Length: 252
Image (cartoon, rainbow, N blue to C red):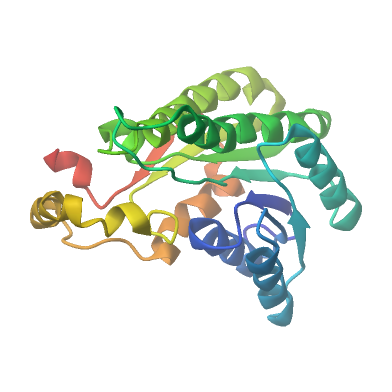
């Protein structure tokens, strides 16, 4: 097992990519903290893992609230042990064309994606430095590299996450803490509103026709690089952005 007995925090793990990563980590022997604001999905994800014989815990947390993050981190430590792996994955969308986007829509997305990632980074980094071992993985997005119509807030937040990844990698490498980002292009429940919006139907049809693989990824395919980046297999990989987009960047 690649992650045997490692304690891993995955934010936004109640559904979508986060849940797929939690399941993949559990199969590799990790002790998984399902960190989620939605109690229903978070508790269900943790119970599913425990029913399959894995060690897991649901920890309620609003990543945009610093005190909530610090309390959640302490709950993970007392329940599962010192945090060794952090996957900053929690996210929301608030789509609107830029000339119609409200300040509230902008702030909500920035607070969750960017501020939430920063809060969790600071919540775990000291114990990783003390242990001289750690893995930190940010979930960015293909929209950080390509932009996305109707999501200037989301694209901006995910672009900022890439800068955070590279800077943290430079600062923490001397402590054997590896920091990387994954940039998926994957339809999930969170992005369904945008993906199914009829306004973008023509654009989606063109993109699908040009896509090298002619399909979207399965969530299990997206989760695999997260396992690699959390394990000793990635012991000389840091500051990198792993695109999981089926080659779509080639045709943009």
